Image (tube, rainbow, N blue to C red; front, side, top):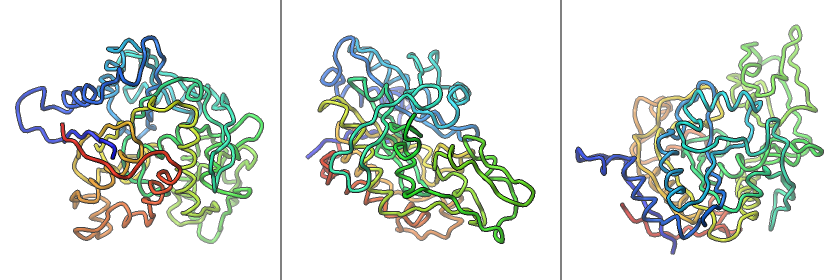
Length: 374
């Protein structure tokens, strides 16, 4: 049975040790980084840099605490993510959100280069959905990693934590030769992934145009168009369309299993016991950090969890969220969620447990855990 260490977000004493920063320091000492990282070993600190308008990411102070903990064991950390929008723009967004060398205490770099095409093809072991994916080169080559995941809702996944962070954040948007079919788009859709537009539903609100990370959507007169050959198949345009006028072929079971397989492909490039997972149940918003806004949280802050077992830390995280009371003045209140309901499942209608079950089936960890409060 795996151990998951937990620090509550509540602070009941006027003492730094009872702050979340102080508790994170204790969590790091408890898990003992020196058991995982060697002197002079490069360690990727994988996080999400956020978006313009999406500010509820993991705070730089917490990233700094992890970086400092890695430095204590004389390893060499760097903070990283894959390209979500054009590379230089994404680094500027990171800086605006407070993620930079000065605040984090380590270099901030893009794992798959400025254009998101610096990656290596990796075969997916035991894959039912995916066969081969393009893993960001830095993540592929580095010997160790700490995965910092902002746990939240997600319109496609239902729940987004460490599994989604690795699958969508360790795999590039596209491969230099094979395009989106070897990138994260192959999890979002299948076949040719052709986006269809229903003119009669469209109100020409331009939200799809504004949200596209590549700027390849436009209205020509009264006709919706996009550059299909350049499209990443990220599906953001379909997600923001209020009238459901855009459609990307998707299958919920395919997507959930694809997340687990994608995470497994990323982890296959690491030796055993070289990856630590830290889940932040803070600012638990309804949607992904990729979107251009951050709605108010669904729950009060719950705390921070850390483990060397991805499946265990994910199961512990969703178990906590299922028991948490939702905030009435949030999307949960808007949607008339009832006390005791699974809030994330009710809001998004997705069986997010499937991604965790599939990760266990793939041998990526165990759902059986012991929660140790620190």
